[in-house]
Image (cartoon, rainbow, N blue to C red; front, side, top):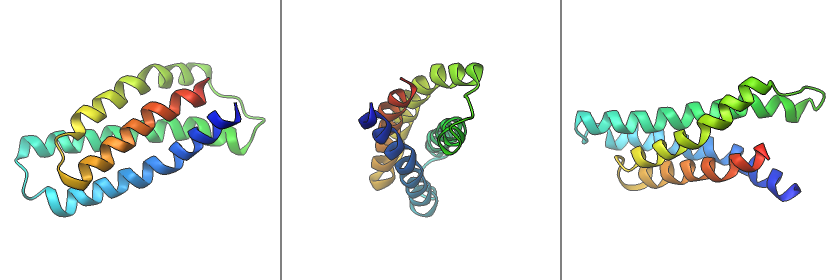
Length: 121
């Protein structure tokens, strides 16, 4: 059980770093050279990744910092049911990126897909 918690917290810490590097790479290098439709896909992937991570962090960090707090069952169920489909969409849309930002976004999406179900167990 402890391994699952460690993997989940590594995902929680790593995903925003990878996402911010992907955002930075897209905004500085790729945005100007990609067509508008592809930039829209890139923006959607990075935005969904960031929102999904933020939702998971908002639910889990307070519980970790103050163990007496209990999770809201309704919000937890919603996050659990939305997290997997959002991660799959992020991974698919991340292929609109190119070079290093693509790899960073796909790895961050895979980390969300793999690490967050472990925390929900």
